[in-house]
Length: 192
Image (cartoon, rainbow, N blue to C red; front, side):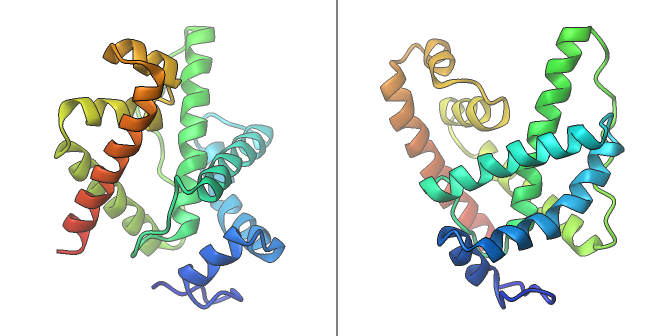
C-alpha cells in the first residue's frame, strides 16, 4: 500500500477506513491533498476559482456517496486522492460539455493534464485509467455500454433502460453484475 508521508494515515487502507468512519481529519486530509491540484487543473481548462470550488465540492460529494454506499471500494495499488481527483475531473468535463451545448461553443481539443510536481501520481493515474479501459474492452458489448453510459456519460438509469430495451430495475441489477465483472477483470489484469 502507498503511504502518505505527511499524513496521520500510514496506508491508503487506514485512510479509506477513516473515511468510512466519517473521521473529520480524513475529510480534511482528502480536501487538502486533492483540491490544490484540481483547482490548478480547472483554471487551465476553461474554469475560474468558483468553478473549481463548485466542481470539487460536487465531485467529492459523489465520491463520498459512492464510498459510503459501497459503489467505490479501495483497490490495491490505487490512491484515494487520485480517485477523488478523477471524480471531480469527470464532473468538470461534464460541466464543460453541458456549457458547450448551452452556448454552442467548441469543446477544447485538448484538456491539460493536472500539473502537479508529483509525476508519479500522474503516471499512476494514467496506468489505472489505461487498465480500466483495457478491462472495459474485455466486457461484452451490453455491459461495456451500460457502464460507460452510467459512469462516464452519467446518464440516468431510466434513459439507459430505454436504450437497452430493459426495465429500470433490471438495469440496476445488470449494472451491478457488469460492475462486478469489470472489477474481476480489472483485478486479474492488474494482479496476474
